[in-house]
Length: 452
Image (cartoon, rainbow, N blue to C red; front, side, top):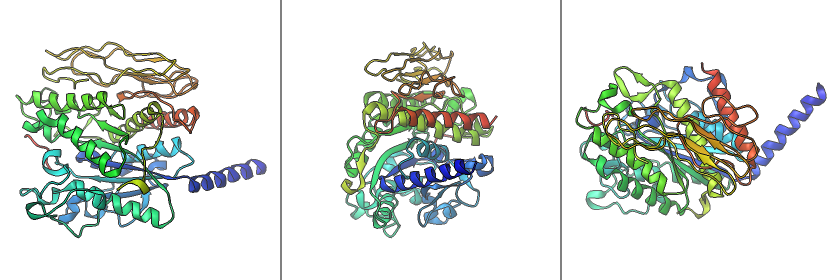
């Protein structure tokens, strides 16, 4: 027993030293209120209450006016944990946990800046002027990127909060001042509910493409991996949602755009949220605590699949940085996953049924590696909900299409808009272990515009 304890201690020291020698993997999380998150901290398993091995920097711009998230703003890096007086959380908790498991030789760092009730047109675009109606939601692109933002802000576009500490540039500077090499490893984006309530929905695809392009340009990372959370069908009035009847086409348009952007860009993936329970019967904009944990897990699975398929887990060094949505009331029903295969693997997705008046598309995500094959089951009828997602990681065997790990294999996920799994440089075991860890966490848990 003593020898075993010594061996474990030696391994821990070895892993710690290895992590210190590798670049810090920094992930950027941004969007509106479902990225902010309404998860209740006490709902987390004990091991996720605080994760000091993962560095976390958080800001919510309502702190500009002393809003309820003022106490949640970080002054420096701290442990990954719920923030503020209410100790709320979003997808970052389980996402960070999975990344630490998948990349044990790297320190994981997360920068999150999200603000409820915001849109790409008025708030998140590069070079925008202040929003005259809601000042504290202004110029969020600059608030996130800071000195990395290439836009010029003069005249009627002058910065509303010129002295505000910006997030990503200052976070990178702090890491580099301490001697860390940093890799900006990816962007997670959960947003679009705002546009789904008004005319901006119909230009959402182009706006989102532009946003991703400018982020990549300013970070000097043309291949930056991006994972999108598709807005939920909880928004449809037929499902008790808050968006008015007659606006179903707006919701359809945003959901379709999110899938289309991911389908056309090999460095973008999307995840489904249709099976997530709403926070309350009178708040179907937002999810309940368990859903935010699942959202982080799905982001992690999609990211691991995305970087595995692309052939490189990272996108940029900080030193170099300067199918349609499912119709709830008659829109086009779309894929809640994409079927792909690698060089010698095969994958297939089960057929999904279209929502009322919509066109049928695949519902399910299947991904196979060079030595594995997987298939997803059929999706249900009506608005596409969570369908099975199967991912085979290296030689780990087949993956489960629902919660829990398949015997001898890695755990899959419901609703992952993934491509192929596996992480070059880390080996298939790391990806498989990360997915199995996510499965263990699952088993342990048995108007118009969105308000600000």
